[in-house]
Amino acid sequence: MNSPAHEKTLEAWIFYAISGASGRSPASMRDIQLVADGINHAVPTERELQVAISFLIGAGLVERTGRLLRLTAGGQTLFDAARSSTAFETWANLSRQLKELGGATPIGERF
Figure 1 (cartoon, helix red, strand yellow):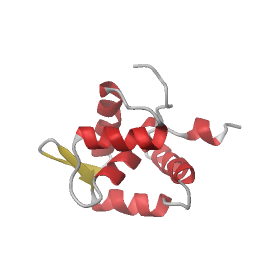
Figure 2 (spheres, one colour):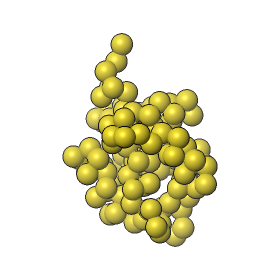
Figure 3 (tube, helix red, strand yellow):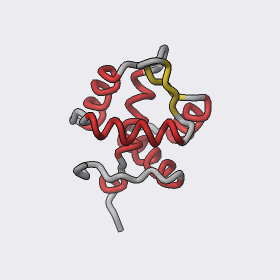
Figure 4 (tube, one colour):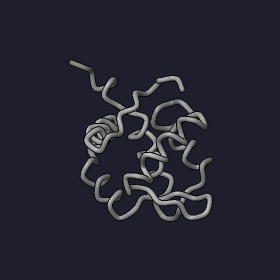
């Protein structure tokens, strides 16, 4: 059985960061990277962002407005369902939900 740390995925990390960065208005890549660093104590690479954002847009969870990103209504609903009392639990919940949609790139996988 995998530990909760192994259950976390790239897509969930970036989705969580987009949610945090775009709370009141769409977020820039830099804002998303800053929030992602706060969640995982690591800055996602350009490639990691591309992979995760492509999946999230394709799944209808995130939308792009010019160079800015934000959650769609469906993305917000998924995030609200995953929200927990701790960031760790929220991230794990998001990972489980996104795996069901086909997003399951392990953190640290090299591209």
